[in-house]
Length: 236
Image (tube, helix red, strand yellow):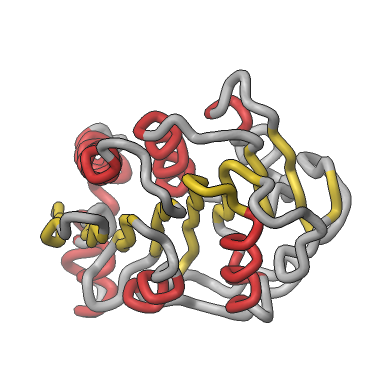
């Protein structure tokens, strides 16, 4: 898990009254991310179930997200933060998440695009922003987008709401997107001096592709689809 994925999840929890129970798939806290990868504090007072393919820290129940042993419409909110790249039958995972969500339920997802292969326990997929948007087409309203250089972003992310929709869903989706843009601007502004120097030097000594990646790291763009279509929101 990386800072921006955690921030997106936190802002989603603040923008929506996420219904319970909260179920996280991919909750196993890998070595070096103990406690840091714990998202439970974002949902105080809500029943929370951490699921993964293997037992371990952060895992309350072993579950396969492509074959979830839960009833239809039994889950309020599903979290898949940096998880679906590790799921071989990823299309089945999208179908299963939608199946178990209650009417009005929420799906929060982030996944890497331009990122190293990382085996937890293995690594299979990279989704483009348009792929994620299409995979989430069953949701009655959603915000999907990316962070990074627009030609090859490092991350994709989205939030989908299963119908029927709550009141002011577009306002809430817009609040999430704007809040994330604000977080990116603030985070880039307060970077340590050493990091700012490193980024500056990268604009001199690296290849054009690497320079674009560094310069665009904190850029983002989202599309909001809902009962009233909202134009793509960008920041950078």
